[in-house]
Length: 262
Image 1 (cartoon, rainbow, N blue to C red):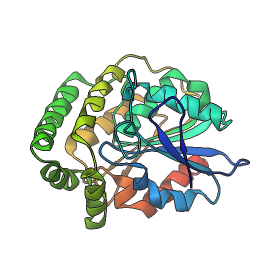
Image 2 (image 1 turned 180 degrees about the horizontal axis):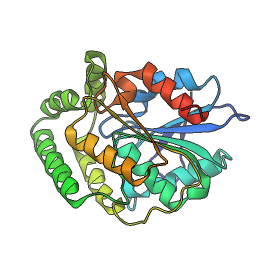
Image 3 (image 1 turned 45 degrees about the horizontal axis):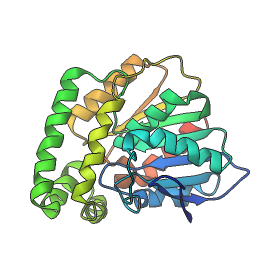
Image 4 (image 1 turned 60 degrees about the vertical axis):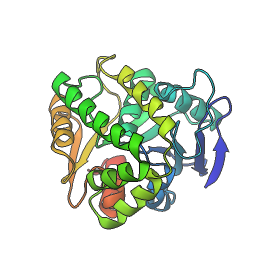
């Protein structure tokens, strides 16, 4: 993977160049970084041009200037596509990554080849009760982080990943997260219920882990019911971070979705 800095933004991204192939962009969950997709890079780089990035406030994307916001991620992605001369891209997002790729699809639908959202919710129709519950859980976790990032990370790994291996990898990413970066996550609320979903000209895959929290599973099912043409998958032996818990199952289902065989 070649590391690049997206000029004029805080964003660092990595690309496995394959100019003649279709491109996939993977966007990670909160408190993680681009390395959460290591198992996807090795699998998909055989047939696709693979791109990962660190969201603002995560990994290497921590040097910010006035006006840099996570709510501008769609614009950052658009700039990345222009630089890499990509007309359409397959978007894969985990948790807040799923939120952010939906925002991109709302703003730049003609540049979306497909949308795969794991552990997310429909940002155009986020139920107020679920939104309230989600916000309450986030506040509890933030309070732990203010006291101790290690305490926060130990709690967070248990509710985010199901397998021991994924929990440990996520923990190591989590403890590198800076307390000051929480301010960026607060911006996500500005992306919710701003657009109406129109007819999509690209396929949508909605997924969650069997052992994700009940609220996330409920949100995924509600979304699929609203968009019956979407593909819905519940991954066995996985929690919130499906791609890390069950990488082989995730990769196999994603490749089938991308090739229209799911």
